[in-house]
Amino acid sequence: MAQPNILYIMTDQQRFDTIAALGNEHIYTPNFDRLVRRGVTFTNAYSECPVCVPARYIIRSGRLPPTLGCYGNGSWHVPEGAPENVEDRCGAYLPRTMQKLGYRTFGIGKFHTSPWDEDLGYDVHLHSEELYGSQQQRSRDAYAKWLADNYPAYDRENLMGERTEMYYQPQRSVQSAEATVEAWAAKMTKEQLAVNDDRPFFGFVSFIGPHPPLAPPEPFHRMYNPDKMPSPQTGSIEIDHMDEQIPWMNRFIWADELNDFSARLAKARYYGEISYIDMCLGKILDAVEARDDADNTLICFFSDHGEHLGDHHAWQKESFFEASCHIPFLLSWPSKLPADTRNDTLVGLTDLFGIATTAAGKPELRDGIDVLAAASDHADGRESLLGYYGEPGTTNFKVMVRSGDWKYIFMANGGREQLFNLKEDPQERTLRNADAPQVLTRLRRIATEGCFQPGVSDALEGADLKKFPYTQYDRKGRIAQMDRSRGVEGFPSHPADVLEGWEFDI
Image (cartoon, rainbow, N blue to C red):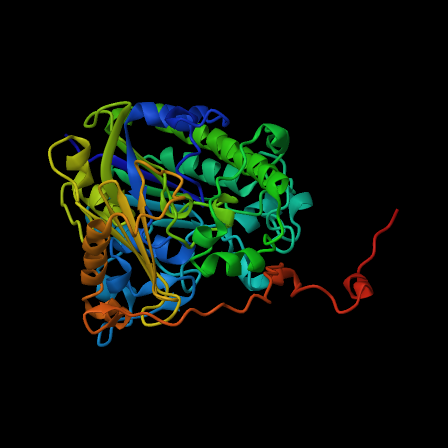
């Protein structure tokens, strides 16, 4: 059989439990359901570093943070003596690797690179970054340019919603449904799928949503009644906020005073975003199914990480609670893989590199496993999966181990540990540290061994994980990501300052 087409589709900050066909009775996702029926759902899929930048570098490099050197947004900790360039220390990025394997490559959407326009190896690379640091950057953003050319009335500030005190307040898109960044991504993908080329394609589509602000377009903004949304799943604050990152982040993104109704309201708009993306996904799936080689097209859908959405008295991501690090992961290839199947193999973002290269006929697993073999029941999966967050050797460092029914989390800040049995306690409300000491010791040992390598050895003190006295982070800061491409830096010193040089006629 000829090399398959390969299409990766990613959302940003989509929880694992947001697909109707996988058990969520409150959400409408006919096209995600369609993708579930098309192939294999991996029910134990994780983001090994649950935050935007490192998650994306893990995907494109196939490497875990110790080799990659990225542990957070803006947090790089390159192993001593290792090359400074990411590809020099990790190997060629996935799209560049697929080029060398004979693929036509295209990338569309949010890529969160540093620099923002880094060459990743795509023949066609169309950016749609969510923030613009300057007018020059905005003018080079493919979506912003398309919007200005085709829908000039919508060419406004903050194209994806307000990222200030409105971060978790219900919003509505400033664009109509056919003009949003998600619609643009689906349209550009359809155009690439229609290209006449003898080569198979490797495509990567990266949606910006449902990452906050929660601003679905009309009519998706009123699709869900907040009074019918389930309330957040919370435990004791002593357990939920053992990770100091959570209360600090709550304050940072203006969510520290949100109540239960606010959480249901946010969930309604979050679900509206997902249902809208679902419709855009349907346009892409229609284009794939219209091709003669649809059965030989491998599609993999996943998210970079999840979203707390009020669970554990938390918002955003960057923790190792399930809401933050457990992700949807759907894999389909009609000519090769079974349909409508569930698979409990432990998988992660590192595995995406090996999925594509193995399908292309030249397996290169790097830090991953052979997921295609696991999907076909031809191989056993990994016994444990590790996740890392925060610069090693600092109070921010955390490490997670998933193994069997268990999850272990170590936080350097205070040397705090959490052990949960996810089978018995899927909401992670009950610490099992005291009554399962052998499991705690075993998983702590796996976590420690995972730090015995150059890129993360600063997280160790001798043969043990390094602990720091517990420190409460400074909780004074607030996020104010305004549109710098339009010269807006923050709130004004005086209200009238906003009106300087601005007027309108009636």
